[in-house]
Amino acid sequence: MAHAEPSNFKNPVIRWVDHRLPIFTMMNKEYGAYPTPRNFNYFWNFGALAMIVLVTMIVTGIFLSMHYTAHVDHAFESVERIMRDVNYGWLMRYIHMNGASMFFIVVYIHIFRGVYYGSYKKPRELLWILGVVILLLMMATAFMGYVLPWGQMSFWGATVITNLFSAIPLVGDSIVTWLWGGFSVANPTLNRFFSLHYLLPFVIVAVVFLHVAALHVHGSSNPLGIEPKGPKDTIPFHPYYTVKDSFGTAVFLIFFALFVFFAPNYMGHPDNYIPANPLVTPPHIVPEWYFLPFYAILRAITFDITIPFTGITLIEAKFGGVLAMFGSIAMLLVLPWLDTSPIRSAKFRPIYRQFIILLVIDFLILGYVGGKPAEQPYILIGQFATAWYFIHFLIVTPLVGKLERPLPLPRSISEAVLKKGGGPVKGAAAAKPMEKA
Image (cartoon, rainbow, N blue to C red; front, side):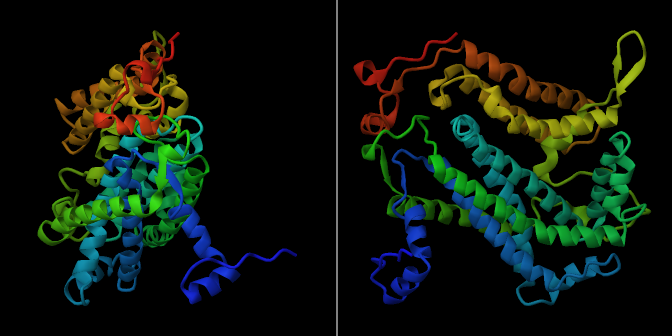
């Protein structure tokens, strides 16, 4: 049986451990000497920031669970006790509560970076799909966590959102009964939501591990969207990007701290400081801000889909809204196959770049409309914004990929970096653009 070679670490303890369990060699390979493209910009900080926030959420969540009581008669009071009587309980809760918003801010920017720079394209399709799975798990975890304080918005938000599953033909009512643990949102619902809210972050960690493993198979994408062609195109991850990530983390933590210490309830809803009351319906039930774009898509379907001239209903409005909401996430899952362009980065796709900007504006409009009452003109705006969201993915993305003529690509990353401004290389230094069909 072959024996491992002695480690080269100077610290004798690390060397002793690594000779028997080469964990430090693995870490050095994957996060030290790991070759990375030399042209990363600060958008590439957000993957590391997401991992930092995830760890923060798990640590503060474990602390809060020690003092939380998952019972409808005591949940609200236990949260108040955490805020008032537990040492630094207020800090842990505000970090956890605002950390959810920070997590979604970071992940949404991370996804935007992937869309803009084509990080989902071959051979990184599975990496992208795992990222979307992480987003779905985050949404489920955040929704269940929002129910736990057992305030008015917690109770009614849980009631409205879980009721959506009743629109699914044949099995919808059974799913709702299973989610509730009975025939209404009550103590069994709170218990199972607490259990799942505690469990799912560790599932997210497992998927993040797969996400990072898939990332290291083919390496990171980069702003130019071209593969490194040799050692001149790459630099070691440490110290170059550990320093860059550290700077980005410091800036992010300042931003995070501003909310925790100066505006801790800014991104929450005041009704959640009122104990849950099944007999009093809030005038306007809304989810947390990070769900608002998808909530707007859900509400945009106000009409039944019927067979023309027959009056036969194929899809009822409620079920149509549910399909549209989940379909909006499905668009991200299949994006690697919807985009027909061989060019990754929108930096070299002037037409597609404009459409991405329109998509971001559209997403912000959906978020704005989702927080407004279900009345005109917000319903009509939401319907137009929803239509454009699906048009972008199903029509614009495939067509522009086939018809657009991209700008010239640089021959290598190092050549582009060494040019002033790091932009596209002109003249003889640039490869000819790919001919479009």
